[in-house]
Image (cartoon, rainbow, N blue to C red; front, side, top):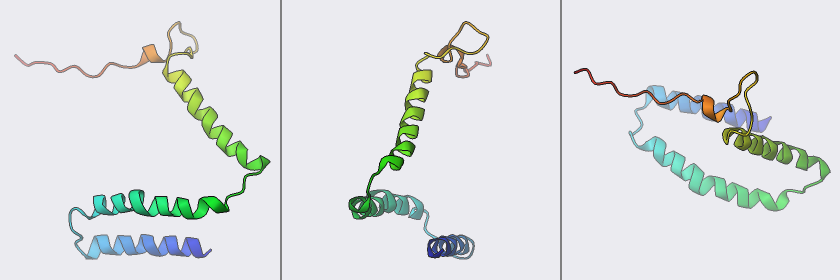
Length: 102
């Protein structure tokens, strides 16, 4: 419950600062850099030693890997579209070509 309260307070504070104060233009990339390069690795290093794997905790990991491998397999054109003789990779639309107005 305290995590939900902290999340709500941070969200409300962010909305308040965005509406009332004028934060500097480069603050968002700076905060993103700090979160991704400092805070997240520190959190992972702090919490990984406390994680204990049992038989049930491997199911979500396996599901994510199976989804990734299935998407990769489909992206390579190994899965056929229903009712057609082409693969998914052959059905992609080409990027719009630039037309000259001469």
